[in-house]
Image (cartoon, helix red, strand yellow):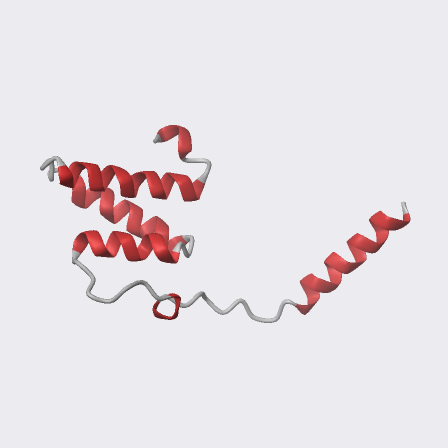
Length: 95
C-alpha cells in the first residue's frame, strides 16, 4: 500500500480492501485504525462512495448509497478561473 500513497484514490481504496480482508479473516486488532485512516482520507478528498463503504464497515447501512446523502462542498464562484483558462487556451492556439 505504501506504493499507492501518491495515488490518493487508489490508496484509500486499498485501505478499504485491506480492512475488509482483515474483517473476513477475523483479524480485528488493526481494523479500527485502518478504517479510521481510510474514512478520514475519504472525507478529506471527498471520495463519497468510499466514505459510504467505510461507514458501512463500521455500522451496516440500511439505505443504498445516494450522492444526495454526501453532498460535495460549495466551490463558490469559478468565473475568474474559467476566464483564466479561456485566455490560456486562446494564447496556446495563437502560438
